[in-house]
Image (cartoon, rainbow, N blue to C red; front, side, top):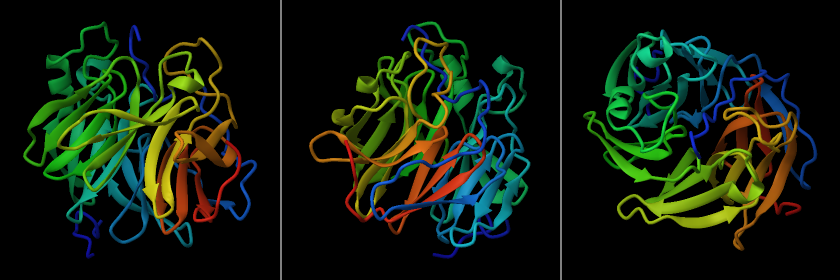
Length: 333
């Protein structure tokens, strides 16, 4: 698929899931299941959370501290600037937080940059028109401030975390307001699903079925870390798997459904606190509703993208890990 210039030229209070406390050291990968290899593909990213595989097969990762989207060659790890000039992170979380492609055009999710956190930008979906030119297609912050949940919130404009294309537009998770928004390409916004304090994070979609990762409320007990599913047309939520705390993303690959856990919760800590360092895992969803560990010892992973039985994991430390061999059978539960 040819990429357009939008591609080529270029609880009580729900938890704020992107950690704003104690930025970690460089990522490390620990034990693997047999026949799985993990290497550091790229490093030095600044404030990266979300990621996606573009139509050209490269990995695209927003850098919130710089207000950029970086293209990473999945073979060589070479980095290049795809888009620049987006709103930057203001309070240690948010900014350009996720990116997705629809019909060859890039769209960037920007979060926590509105006036309620001291910013003067739009928290919403930005269409990439050129390397330094954007069009806001949906003001999610204004919508969220006008449609508050029925419990107290710290940030009225919300914390939009993940962006996923669906027919006619996008789904967007809000980990602070505990809901999923549906957004058309013309900017029409509506509530798609509203949850209790489950902290929705990453999304994946295939054949009309949506898969959602749930971080769970503080103190992030493993039983509340879940992957659930529902239909785009009929959003009835069904549990798929559970058993690992602080799930931050879910992704489909040729060999099945995968998720990332940021790791073990430090306990009853303030909302938004990170997991324990080097305790994250790449997980495979099993048919019996459990997970198998593919790689553990990851340092605060935030998202995963999959292409051709290879996983690309972004960490808060600024690394992208490349995990090869997802087609093999994986290890322990």
